[in-house]
Amino acid sequence: MKKLFRNYKKWCKYLGRKSSLWLPTIQQEVQQRKLLYMGLYLLIWGEAANLRFMPECLCYIYHHMAFELYGILAGSVSQLTGEPVKPAYGGDNEAFLMKVVKPIYDTIAKEALRSNTGKAKHSQWRNYDDLNEYFWSLDCFRLGWPMRIDSEFFYVSPLPEKRSANKDEETGNFARGRWIGKTNFVEIRSYWHVFRSFDRMWSFYILCLQAMIIIAWDGSGDLSSIFDGDVFKKVLSIFITAAILKLAQGR
Image 1 (tube, one colour):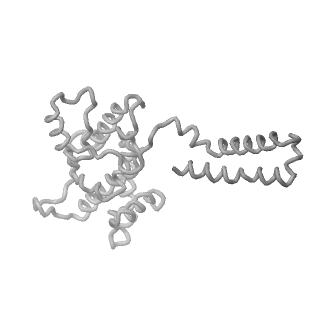
Image 2 (tube, rainbow, N blue to C red):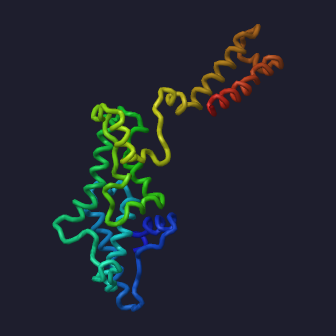
Image 3 (cartoon, helix red, strand yellow):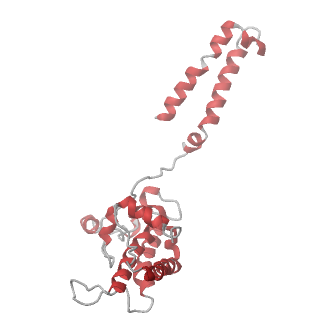
């Protein structure tokens, strides 16, 4: 149980929320309750499909469903209806798949369409990690339980070719449905990454070239002339070049 719920407990601690793993005071019922909690988690995992790539999203789902399980087992009564607590999603066939998994998966599919088969800028669409990052903050509890389908999390701005030609109407649509976009890091594609990713190699080549030019332009042109005092002082200028390259890299 500690191994299975390690990530869930870290998630609760990170968000400052108490976990929904409530154990009874009667020792004889503890083991059965642990089995039920583990069984619920494995059932969610088994039916989660591609949501398995979003571990914190699964933590959010489990957090609410485990709390419902505790309420059912404890015989709690709803303050709103005055009736025994019932699962928010239940009663219908494949309710979990259709009402929990499918809305999130549909959002992922819509965002994938916005990627234009990977040609669109990263800032214009969300992948699994971006959607999962939403559940790293307390804002995720705005979704509620049952989840509000009209939440900004589920909103995906339309593709450019499908947007309305009327700018006023388009502006109104964006006002009603605010696309939350990227949560944290946004990767910017550029050919400069070829130089940025291999900066140590390029710096080494430039410094070696500078040193070889200094030695070649020396009167003798002999490699052993590097040990000559004047030539050696000139070769030491590569450290100034290295500092300038580091400054350029930092910018």
